[in-house]
Length: 210
Image (tube, rainbow, N blue to C red; front, side, top):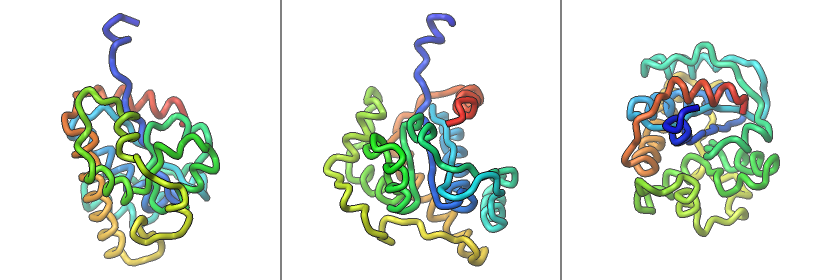
């Protein structure tokens, strides 16, 4: 490896978690991956769920993403496990109970695991990430004062409600909601996005099987 290659910064690895990995998390993965690629952000995105392995994205999720020019038709669900969590720099959950599942598998993940809505509100309340600020340091600033007890219940204000088996209109509204929350997070966490070879970094992330 050349000296220049060894100095290349590593991508921020984002893991998105929901219940089945067939509705909310694959939509979030697709939306966030498209956003970071469009802005040249050095980040990779994958998703997993609590329940299923090998299931396709729901028809509603496929249609909602297709309407935005994104393709999740070949998505195959993955069951969350400890190595996935350990390898991620940021874990975005759809509900508080998903945060609890993540932390139950890997307690050290607490400081990097948020619900999507919690993270969006917290980044809005903090100054944007500094260009020289390490991502872990930024998350520490964003998460200052968090208490595990605050995520013990099922709080709709901290959750993206599950569109599973609901109408296409609900899926489309969920996609719009996800995109808005992700936009808030990206604009604060990566206000000055570095350029990246996203093709290479995504291959590295997938190849690690996290």
